Length: 179
Length: 401
Image (cartoon, rainbow over all chains, first blue to last red; front, side, top):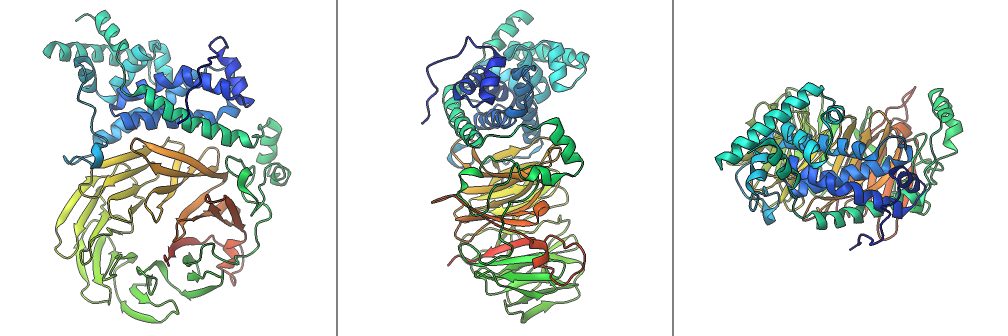
């Protein structure tokens, strides 16, 4: 199995890393991966609540970014670009799953079992929210974007972002208190 | 609980398996990076865009063309400014790995043999092979017919309302399912016992589940967006599930009947063959479309063609289903649209039909990578028509030795 390298290029600016990766530097790509993939996976997971799907989404998003790297404008920040892809794909996936009438039969090898076991009460409460509300919570508190930035990422009015955040926090508090 | 405390706790949430997932993802990303970097990708310049917009494709073609039949070190990850592989063969001289291929054009259905020769079977459409390639079920006008490869009609069901998309049951070949209008009907393999199975069926070829001899199970897509699997002989419903995508696409069972692939323009999913539960789901962005998908004969790999609408560019991916997620490997990319992907009967070659290049590509990934390209495909299957030829549809590639 390939191992993530021990050497880090944490001192390099994002723009330098992108330039390096565009010019073929694998080390610079590794550092971009280190900086952005873990949060992408975490964000995807807390929108879809499915490990395999979160891995698919984060991986596909990073591959999409990688393939489009040569035409990426280095003046733009890389993180929001990647996270926009991740969160929108995760919302699509979660919506699609919600629309399905999945039969109550365990698939082979235990795949795609919802990761309910071992979740703490807050994670369980978060899972009760709609994908759209989970997404704004994740963008705000996991990825630490401002409401204005979230509005841009999700192509929503800022007021909608604020109201979703407010309702999400209220629902979370209610669910946690009930548990 | 206060907002501040909630926020702090949300920030502290950890996703499971992050480390292992990162290692797997990095492995894939690093491999993809090496593929992309193996051939330096030319940067698009504004001048090139203007030239392209002005139709000066010839000026760009010289920049980005991959030789046909060459070592394929250069074709994975390569981008094409204009559709097509340069130095493609002018005519099909053989089918790699043999077999027989059904092709549909405006003239009718053709059979391409292993040596590349082709014959017009007749003015049929929606042709499909019987399990061992001894017969072809097809539609002619308002009739469903079974013909042998020499063109002799074995049986026909005449005067059907809008027949289409027949599908011959695997294994014993004792049943043929087909659509008539929006109904699904089934007839025995000898043309007898035609009966109605379901109403309100979408225009998607029904898919037979491989499995135990003597049992005939078929899946179909309803107008209401359900994927339904039914025992044909008893009529019993085995399961139904909602399709993720709203636009019907295609259905295909894995060779041993464990999973059903449901493909649409925006999603591809694998359903559990016993229950219809979703095992895997892959969706794509709003600007992308899945054009075609085909499960390999060993059931381990799905070939998937994807079209990027704003970029007017297509890619073929080979998807392997791992214990977690998909392992996606890009196999080929080029400008314009790919119509279909079809595995050879032995699973060693993949046919990609490249509409905008008027070419067929045969790709092999193991033991050594190869690319064979054939040009002027439209004219080959409409030799006597005047004007611009259409682009034929690749049907089934039959059969395993």
